Image (cartoon, rainbow over all chains, first blue to last red; front, side, top):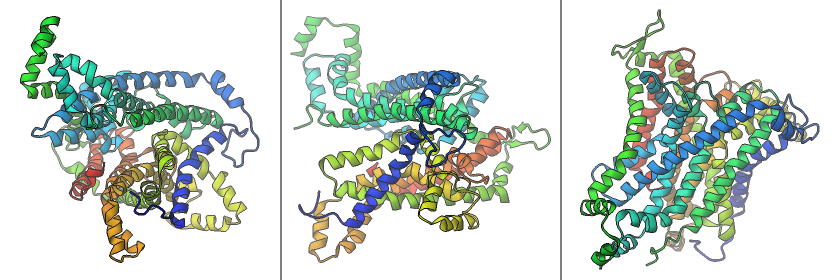
Length: 272
Length: 313
């Protein structure tokens, strides 16, 4: 939508855009740098020396890292699976029908991420208290799935809206029932959007800390482990090693989700 | 046609269900909608109401137990000097963070929407998405490294011979402190950093919808680029800014991790809620405190909807 083909970019704009992007990315680069420092008691800059020993220490000498990691992966997997089912159902229903209260319901599905996480956290916690539920992995999952549904819903509804109605009608005309139409026609069309939504939900759950502090009992997920390391640091570079790991684990699904939704932009049958 | 195809396969129970749905599409919508609606309705909205209810209870000062009787005294406590300060402090911080985010986000969004093409467009998109989705705690931790007294900012100031400036800023009342990671400036910087992507994306979406012929028309009618920006582009980008501010404002209002890790000991709403429900065991007051961001966001969302901010989300 550029207004004239050979318009030059204003210098001031270019500088402030680049400066803004640097501001967004340099802090993360520091996380990587400090994973290699020899100084473990302070955040001295520049690091007095460089070593790779912390990766070994994190791997073999810190057994406290592993249980939170497993718990986080488990919670994220279950929450994502639940979110995929409920989020897709909600998106399918709200994209196909117009009915009274539809706007309110779609607002309701956005609410868990529109309101601050602390509200979700404390209300879930007090509800668990009232119902006498003991804190366990399932209370964590309950909290996570609630906002993961929103992520899947958002991804799925965008795709459902682009889905061509004529394909579904054609499938029905050719004698397929609703389930066959869903399996052979709709699912292949929305598959990449669901995969993308699922990956984002996984990343979100794997990283969540505010709601988790309220819904976890004695167990700690990886973010909670990290939070306690931030408040009471032991070997600081080890925290950095884990942070580097977390960055890589969350970024890969996001890159994948990006490519999936980008290639899926041209949904079959929509180009009429 | 369809009769013949069905005849070949036979007519199973799935087909029967399918036919019912076909005849009654509303029933299908209901069947699809019910499970997720029950989940959100019971788990989320149910808990919210339970919490709201508790804000009308009170805490007995002597026994430390929650009195299950309807009262507004807990809300009255919110208006006490110390609690009011917490609210004012949090709202001020949220407003400043939102302004900070707009200032840094706008040029990025503007460049990405109007000048980036092809691979630069993809680059900008990923450059915004990656920080948005990378770990919240890792981002906070990165700033702990940056703002530490022995960290990179102090080192930079020393090498640029600007230590006097840094010391001068830290000596200021209210916003200063013993070091950057124990001051309001530190808290502000971390908040701005963490929420910026939430501001960039809606602004960019709004800017991308500005039709280029509006801008040409403005130029044809003799407007300077500056005039075109302020009278055509900016008003059309405003819904995007408001949409972004919903996120930056709401997220700052409810956050308690950032001010706990980077900041001075003065509480924000999130921290107050956390300590009240935890160590203090004063669920009613904690619940009343959470009503504050809910009420603020309710009004905010209502205004935002009226200004068309939801169309760019």
